[in-house]
Image 1 (cartoon, rainbow, N blue to C red):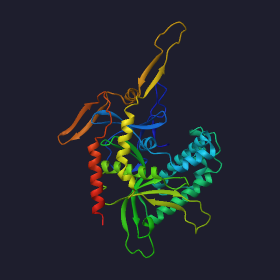
Image 2 (spheres, rainbow, N blue to C red; image 1 turned 120 degrees about the horizontal axis):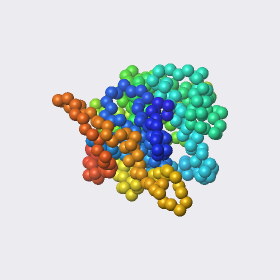
Image 3 (cartoon, rainbow, N blue to C red; image 1 turned 90 degrees about the vertical axis):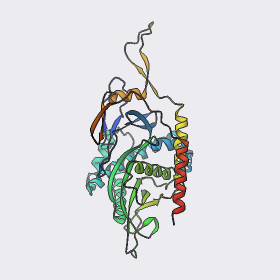
Image 4 (cartoon, one colour; image 1 turned 180 degrees about the vertical axis):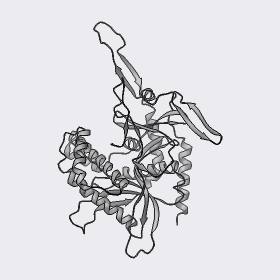
Length: 371
């Protein structure tokens, strides 16, 4: 995305998308880690220095893609289009969603958006991402979807705290980027809709995940939000002392002012909350069998000689070269600050099964106490 700082690559030529990521904007000043992100094969991973060690953390979507069964709508889609065509269309949809997120981030940060700039934004995005398929209808669709979002912001009086917020879980060893977190005002209607009869409203913290598709919301969307809640609870415990809501949002097709402009679903009490730690544990069991390495080919390849043109490099070693293994971490302590060299050691991410049971027991106790 436009707000990411890309790190230039050197001899490897394999890490063009290795990047330091920061929130597009944030009023929450409590960032414990510098977070890096890259792709290995088709999966997205985050990297950070935790307890003086470099850790590789799978993204929320990587974990869910590896552990959840394929959604029914996606199976039907593949049956209709064939695998290759379906993959192309899904990639096109993902790129549209990326551009929508970029523009929404700017909209929420500034509090306004000039719709007359959308055409230029689409053209710039096409050039930046080397898009070779038609985006003829993107401009109008983006304007309509932004208008739908405007209605949501007004309806719920949304007050953003952070947008595109990257977070890691040092406890459960995963990471993700939240679309938005902030306060909404909810009434007595369905999904907290404010009704005319409502004299008093509740102001609650809310994690929102934008979707641009019209297929509805699915199990993976529920699980995604529940995992984001874990990230927020771990990184900002002071924010979660009170109620926190989880919402999926998506624009609807509409024709006039009387039409509903968006779909929203409260996922706060989804049963996926009981399953997400299992997904993490299952993923990590399978991940232990993988050893991501790159083939590095360099020098002169000469017939009749084997002169070491090929070597295999561990992905984490490549990351260390980018981060610089001799950089220092400054830990603020009561008596001042202490500098420590980062060790060349990779954490093997693990989740203690007992922790999962303890967490689930705690969750069940909370459910019992809920009136």
